[in-house]
Length: 301
Ligand code: SAM
Image (cartoon, rainbow, N blue to C red; front, side, top):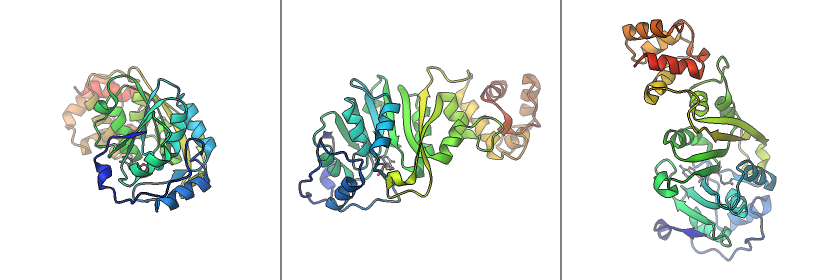
């Protein structure tokens, strides 16, 4: 494993006793995880959304859902102590893992010592320059995401039009249900539209709280989002499309006309656009399909 880090020098960790963790130990195990945490004096940080996987079957499931294989390049977000990273590395793929917690690169240097196909990059995934990190060749994303910033991370990855082929991520079940929801459903919202605009999402499997240390208070699932070659609907201006979507769901109990007026769209401009495209302005935004949002956005240009 390589670590391209000056920041590691800042690390306060004193060198741990040599761990009996190596290429033959599976980190996704409660005893091994406790052992690593104890050896490095680690406490799972709630603030950083740290819930470490301890179930090897779940790790295997994520690796399989990603179709990880030799020759693949995988961006992992938040490797933690290396649990999922190890499974991904075992597939033969090249793994680049971005971790925010400054204490963890030193831990990963030890837990993943046997793998020369892993690079750990210290930093915040929302600030890292992903194009310069991953280049312009296709890559996959795999992550057990920190739940406190799931949506911003997903949106940042999707909006950048990166050459991602598939995103396989552990998320809160409630978030996954929002990602796959369709028009008319209570959970349908701006996140559903954005995810379905860029990808084809499906839930791969459920993950119970006991698969983590510490156990989260919510149910989790692994969701697979296959990134579309072209967005699901053609729009003339993506910015306008998402402005409309955001406005429509901003006040979801109002008619789309009132919600959009409330978001600052001009009344006369809206009336002309609705008249021109034939969509009913008295419907609620939550009943609009992606295609209808696209038609409305184009009519507003
Ligand atoms: N991958 C490990 C596993 O499956 O056991 C850890 C998953 S834990 C749910 C989330 C990880 O994301 C933690 O290691 C946390 O420190 C890291 N993290 C939190 N915010 C981050 C950010 N903005 N950028 C990169 N990593 C982050």
